[in-house]
Length: 227
Image (cartoon, rainbow, N blue to C red):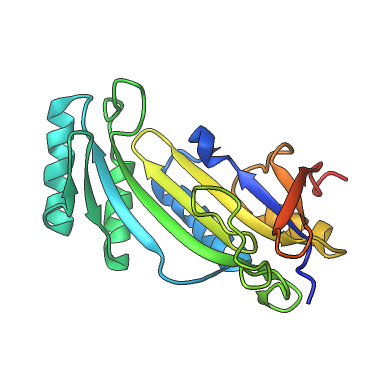
C-alpha cells in the first residue's frame, strides 16, 4: 500500500529551541487554554509527562524559596544538577503548582530573563478529525512507516504538544501531522480555531513518499489556514 501524503506543522523548530509565546499572563489561565485545545484537537497516545523545574541562577533567595515550596508539595526532587532541580508531577498536584506560579514575584527570573520555576507538560498524540471525534484515518506513524523526520524524536504521522508554564511567561511548542489530501484546509482551520497561539505561516511542510524504501521527501508550503 502506498504511504500517504502528509503535512506537518513544526511550531517552532526544536533546533532553534523555539516555542510560541502565550500571551496569557497567569499560568493557570494558560494551562486551561492548552487543556481546552488538547480536548478538542489531540487524542493522547501514551502517558502525558509533567515535570516541575527550578533553575539555578537568579536571586538565590527566591531559588531557595521555590525549592522549599515545591519540595513541600511534591517531596524531594528526582534529579538535581548544576543547572536545575526537577520533580515529577502527579495530576492531583498540578492546580497547587499553578497557583504557586501565579503568585510569583517579578524577581523570579534568571539573569537572562527566563522563568526561575516552571511546570512543563509533554503530551504525545494524534490530531482529532472533528467530523468523527477520532484520529484522522491514514495519519499515524504506522501509516507513514515510522519515518523519523529529524534527530529530535519527531515521527511523521504523530503529533505532540510541549507546554511550559513559568514564573516569567508561558509557551507552547507544537509538532502536528495533518492529512495531506482534501481534508487539510479544514483540519488546519480546526486547529487554529482552538489552539491558544497564532500558527506561523513559515513552518508548514508537505511530505510525499519517495521511491519505495526511501521514505519521504518534503517541501515547504504556504500555510493552509491562509490559502
